[in-house]
Length: 222
Image 1 (cartoon, helix red, strand yellow):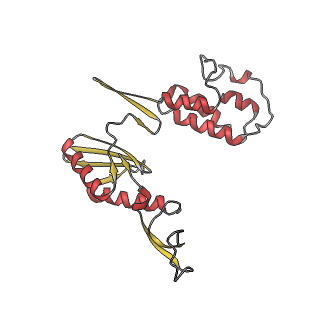
Image 2: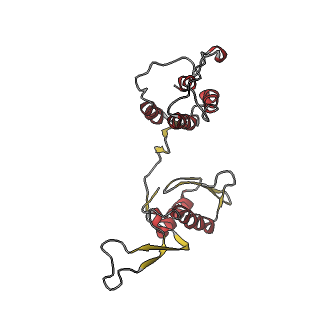
Image 3: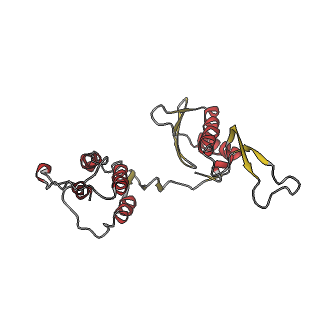
């Protein structure tokens, strides 16, 4: 599901004033300002106001917010289960009872401008493929985009993520000139381990070098 103009749904609890927008200036009171009641895009309060509005609706519907992940909401009543994961204005919903799901979607559409995108195939960088006996989750496109970001889309493959004998790797202590770029790639690799646990050790090792990476560390990152 996708929420249209999500941040415009939020209600402000703080007093926020803004200049009259261009094209809507009162000619008799050009120096007056507007007192906002609803959130707008660009306000630092908007993400929180939207989350408060949406989470309040879900809690009133009967959901509970996960203690481990505040973006995950769980509905459990009798034998019915619904899981709703919210990421800004995108959400993925699954449940055990189609009637309860239909009721939830109807109530959501009454409160918010919703768009049903159908069965999930790509969500937050994770691809979903469906088969008669189950579902396969991968990050192939995410990995390919990561290679492009690192300018390594044409690189040769390696049998292991890191050299097998790290203590024998030549150590170049020259400070890497773009530490922000290093951290960006390392962070993207961390997200890739969601579906690639086989590289977790290597990624964790590289991430330990993020504070002050050297040229040698960047070679290991590549």
